[in-house]
Figure 1 (spheres, rainbow, N blue to C red):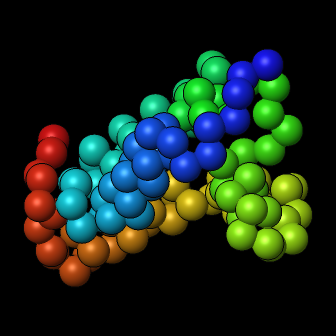
Figure 2 (cartoon, one colour):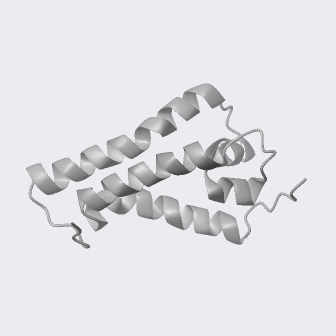
Figure 3 (tube, one colour):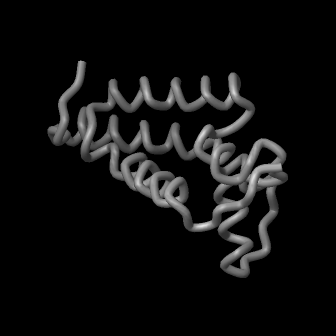
Length: 113
C-alpha cells in the first residue's frame, strides 16, 4: 500500500497543473487546449485515473484528488456528483477558450496550431 503523502511535492505539482488548466483559455490556443482535453480523457481511460492522483494517493485510492482534499477541508463530498462535474470542466474550459479567442478575438499568450 502506497504511503499517503499529503501536501508533498506531487500535491504542489498537481496544484500547478490545475492552475495551468484553469488559466489555459488565456494562455494557450484553443487547439492546444483541445489536444490537452483529449489527452486528459485518454489518460483516464488508460490508467483508470489521473496519473498525478495515482502517484500521490496510491492506486488503491477510494477517492480522487478533489474529493480527498475537499474532505480534508471539512466539506461533505458527493463523489458521484463531483465526478460528473469534473468530467464537464475540461469541456467548459475549451468552450471558454473558443469564446475568448475566436468570438471575442483575444490572442492567447502561447499561440498554437
